[in-house]
Length: 492
Image (cartoon, rainbow, N blue to C red; front, side, top):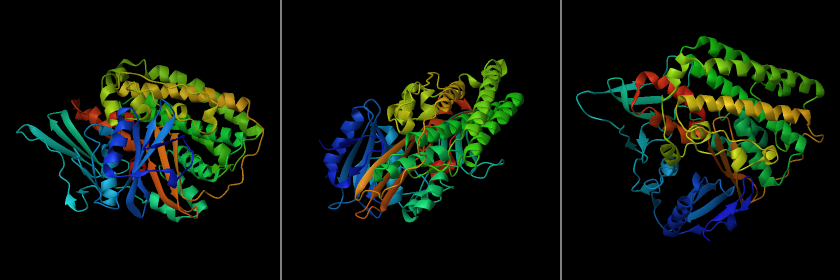
């Protein structure tokens, strides 16, 4: 046995991880990948010591996470690339190279992750280019015309038809992971909430679960349910925002404005609980800062029932519109095979028939005792990515209303203990975009020496590139919005 298995949010002693030689490590990781496991992390166990790395792989079928280690002390920082056989590992290897100088031997496509135009430290990156008299190149961004985050999109086109789209990011890099390591506990909570402004609940949940797991702190059930309600309200609000954007991009103003109106009610519902429309300040180590009183419960129920009823009418209007459906259906298709190969997660993956949801596969907090249904479709187009959001909204409404009817008594916060020394923990949550991963390691005194974050956009940006192949360049805004990915979450 060369790798060890843990559950989501289960701490493990670093001394229990076997740090193998490169050959044995490669064999171990390939065996795990061949068995159907998915890479969710590739990083040094200590940020200031790249000589020992760990590969983290998730197995939804067993709800287990495998950890394999490799020791590079007696040789160069080189290893045989996994990406030729398992393309979803591609960006993990590129990131390891960019951050720590590793060289994945025979890697199929080394490219920048957060440094825009540099690979292997100083080598200028050459964008993929198709040659031919009738091929032209279109470059968009990083500065955009609207109020939008920076990203660079480079299209290789024949007329209106896109042959290839290459996406270059990194303009929003804020060094969040280093800041979390260097900060105190109060600052860490604020930083975790700031990873992606529209996924406050998803990221703070992963961060608190990780730190609580390291310290053996278990929030009371009432606190877990309040967290659950916050996470699901965020899911509803952000899915509604995505639907509004999709409607806007096909010129369906009535639907777009109607979605925008009820999204405001949902984010105001979060403010009703904690004073912030994006849920900032709700979570704290050991539970939550704010309780839900009977008066708040009544207002929440009224808001939720109003929006749930309204959105059924808006969805029926949009998804029965011939004009809208003509733009949604078959546009920006990603096959199930491609989605599985590149490791799409969340709505982007489930729209291609990939039956994966962290809330079900690696349950955490209140999701351990609240059964969530996984919504999937198979067409992999804009329609599927939009319609699944409407289904997930309905499911979230049902669960929140059920929990408000039977909110258990108990404490909203438990005393936080000190983190365990020389330990590692993997925390996975399901944000509205999909799988979020936070990995934390401690030193001999329990202080953080490594903190790694993986946003679902890290997996899914390449899915957008695939969706644009053999698609009209004029459909890019619609495809882009149907994925609705995060620049800041990717760039960290």
